[in-house]
Length: 418
Image (tube, rainbow, N blue to C red; front, side):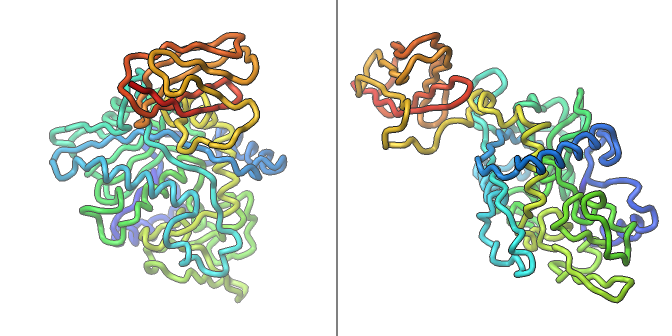
């Protein structure tokens, strides 16, 4: 698992890794499959190439990832607040959408390849039993440092096919993640972040106040390697095949060193045996550095992430799953008429409302939500253009009705009167 530690540890790690040629990857969750050269990872790499060749990465539709955060704590100071969690989820979305406040720090050399990955993160509103949730669980664990952390994660994990599980623990200082091609059968799938590098405020380690460690681990979870992956093998060489070595991404120059072994936010100039030089992306979220140095993903990394969400993690971001987990609740409902728009009458409603689908649809799931995301009612419609919906006893106010036919999701505001 990919783990961040103090600089002194990383210098030692750099020297050890140089001689062992990275025989072990320190960022992989324990009990996972070795990251490269496995049958599953080879299949994934083949899929990525085909995905790019057919232009799958050109789509700019937003992929939303449902998230549950599990907070493991022993001391009250480590229990973390709901606000702290929401800050981290917002930081994840901003980083993956390239809306983070420090994009101006991307050097001119790399701005042409800096990318919006069109991925967003959502704290779920429904737990695995369909009950309302904040998307956050707290677990008091006495003597947490003496517990088997992996077993704790396995015991608290929600269905990883439907939820991105994020654990927060005071027992580590960095982060660890699974990869999408790992064998997740009865294993942990998700990522772990240290309490003092999680969120954007509070008691955080110096240099880790922007939520970047979680962004880094989310990158691994979605199929990204380190920018320096296997780079020690190529020390001093510049003519390295970019699509079959390192991180398999051609717009992230392969690094030979850990940034912490040479300096924080360093310029990244590397000197080649043939006398030439080049620059690595020390500002890339998949490098090793302070998160104050990180500010970008690339177009090539975007291809891998989008391929992951199109294959190994497709169910996670499916419309059906977003509805199930409560992450499909629209944040904006168009006020202009649209083709086959969903029409509700009468408005305001009292005990009943008629849904006009605009045309007869074979099958649809109809859901009624409160504006805070709570699911209040669910029913189905078969071969109907209109559906009479009997409302539960609701206080006056605004609600949202969603209709999903398996291909599209439509929604409309419902006003309930006295």
